[in-house]
Length: 208
Image (cartoon, rainbow, N blue to C red; front, side, top):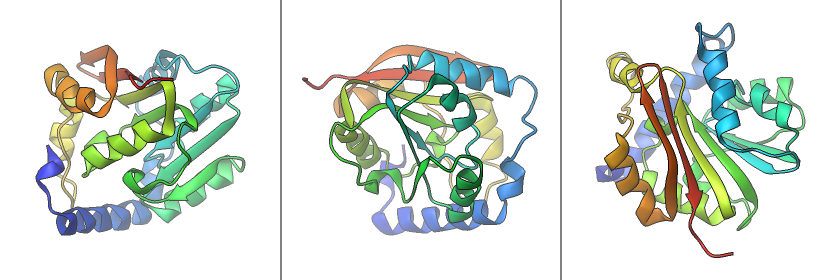
């Protein structure tokens, strides 16, 4: 995994990502590929999101997943991204969403302030996974849920890696996902690795 990168390399990859996504906002707006809306709907449902809970959407892009999250009536939605132009698109569509221009490893939300975190179509882009997961564990409440997903599956990332101007990690198989998440305080409760759908749901294992 990408923990082998130096801090300088991580910063350079993040810079390349920021530039790419700032310049290509329109590529990530609807219409979505066939079947993707249904899988995004299933992703949010799998989180067990309840009315009044607090949500974070990591690597939100233009807020594609937020359109499905708002249907559940969360009390607060936070969204973070490396690209300011992406966050501006989110604010135009969802003015009440609280946006954060940063790497998720640096997101300064209070301890135990989140119920659900979504990392949709973005986990491969996170270069410092160890510190990102530690920070998410800090911000999630006891019993909080972490959802890692991709509506086009692991094979899509393999192909995408050939065309992006920055590094992408492969999505982990089940054994690798458990090895990554368990030491950082997460227990996997759902793992699906289908041809066009990748879904991991994990709960925090810290004490209340």
